[in-house]
Length: 160
Image 1 (cartoon, rainbow, N blue to C red):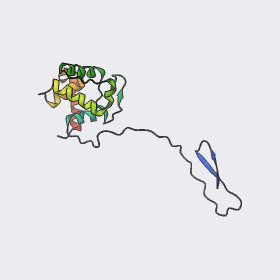
Image 2: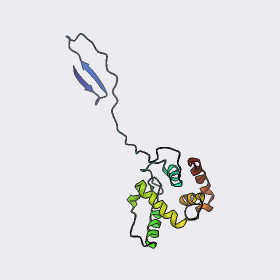
Image 3: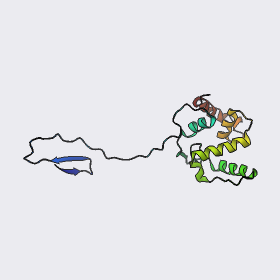
C-alpha cells in the first residue's frame, strides 16, 4: 500500500488499488512529534527530611535547571552571584584551595555543598528558621518580615 503524506505528515491518505478488496478505514490525523525536554526533579517525593531538601523544594521545586532572570539566580537552590562570592570568600579564609564558578550553581550537588559551607561558617548554632530566613533574605534575613512567608513555605514542605 502506498501512502501520500500531506501537510508535513499531519495527514496520510492511503493509495488503494482497484484490485484491493479489503478497504481500510482512513487513518486518524497524525500529530507531529515535538520533543520537550523537561529536567527531572532531583527530589523524588515532596516529603523531605532535611532543611536543604525543603529549601530546594521551595526555591525551584527540585528543578536543577531553574533560572530567575531578574535576580540572576540559578540552579536548584537559586544561588545568586553574591552568594557564590561569599562562599569563595569563606573558602579563602579557611585556606582552602577549592573555588566555585558561576557554572557550578547549575549542579545540585555543588549547590548543596555551597549551602553547607555557608551554613557551617555563619550558622553553626543557629536554628533552622534563622538559617532558612537568612538564605532567603541575606545576612539579616531573620529580622525581615518579608522572610516569614518564606519560612512558612519551607515548614509546609518539610516533614520533621
